[in-house]
Image (cartoon, rainbow over all chains, first blue to last red; front, side):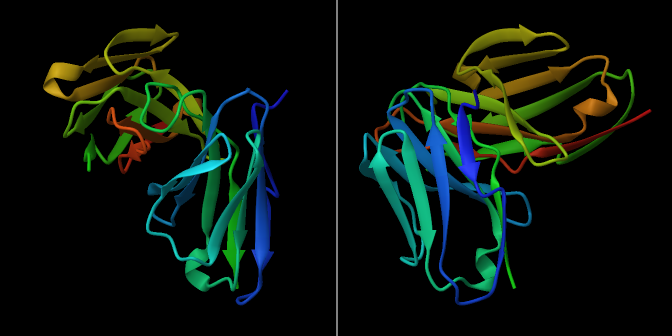
Length: 115
Length: 110
C-alpha cells in the first residue's frame, strides 16, 4: 500500500544514454512533483504537474522531459545523460496544486549514477 | 523567492540528550514541513506545520509564522534519530513549490 512509489530505485548508466524514471501515487492527489537532490544533499524542485498539466518548470536542461499520462503517474525521461546528472531524484505528490497549503508526500527516491 | 535557512548545520548528541533545530524563512508561508532523511536516504514526513505547535511522540514542532521561524524539538534522542532534518516552506502563490533548507545533520551516539 505504498503511497508514492518510484522505479527503479537504483540506476547506473553510461554517459550519453537515455533513461526513464517512473513515479506512481495511489493517494488520489492532483499534483505531482520531481525534485533533485545533489551530492551535497540539497533538494530542489524540477517540475510540477497538476492533473496532467505542467505547472512548474524550473531551470532544468531540456534533456529532462517529464510526462504525465494520467494524474496518478509522472515519469521523468532524461536524454543524453551527463556526469552532472548523477543525483537522487524524488517524486512527490499533494492534494492541492503547488503553492497551496497541502502536505507533500515523497517517494523513496531513485539513485542515478552516470559513469 | 523565499529563502529557507536552517541551523545548526551539524549536531552531535549523546543518546538521551534533547535538541532544538531551527528554521528561518524570509516570507509569509502557507506550507511548512519538517522531514527526516534517514541514513538509507528515505525522506519521511515529520510535521506539516505552517503555524502553531504539534507533537508526535518524542518530537514536537512549533512555527511562529509572524516571526518567520519554526523549531523542531527532539527529546531523549535515540541513535535511530540520526540523519538529516530538512525544513521546507512554500509561499501562498500558485505555481510555487516547496523550497528546502540545507538541512541539519544529526548524529546520535550510544
